[in-house]
Length: 283
Image 1 (cartoon, helix red, strand yellow):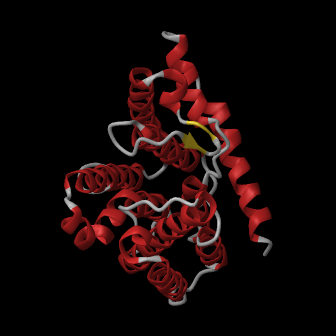
Image 2 (cartoon, one colour):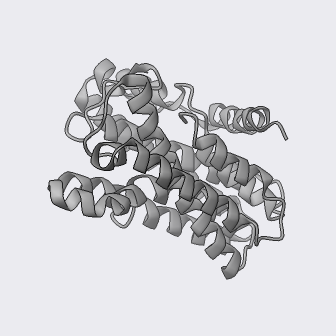
């Protein structure tokens, strides 16, 4: 498998479906432009690709519901990017090589664009349930996505980082990464598995894989910032423990993720290659 070529093909499916599904609200031009600025800013669509790929790997049949579910994941991810970049949180100036949303549209409009995307993601989730043949599976997936991206997951991890002092941050770093990064990746993988009808054992294995992938993704991103930008985030693994230790932990999670997949009786090549890809490239 040429992984990068395959990723582009699968990402293009998501890209085309997003363009097909997304309709601007038409109430406020600036808000619509702010939403589109981030949603169609050239992301790799990794998370919905994971949803779709896991679903297909487990034998899920092609249907409109799985695309709605995958697009809901991507829309939700883009909401987190807008909010994370805001001055009150991570205060970032660039995202995907472009000025962050609030730098272009202002903090208030950017905040509302993020809110709008969060609401839109749930519209898509509801529609995926409505169109599904087995509505109970899609309802379970939607519930899990909400849990893993709310106070128990993505938002909780961000909050924990904000309120932690220097000592707490060092002790809680992996928990923070698990919340901020791993939980959304887990939601992506597990939602695809749930609607494909995966059994409990398979879900447990994929949950461990997704967590390891999330750690590898974040640690690689921290190392890339240090290498390419010459800047070390004092709240990152590199800032707190140094480059050599971070590389060692990154390699641990890469190996653990790949080895975890070995026990599954499915073609896991794409998921395994995703770990290797995320460990060396910015997504």
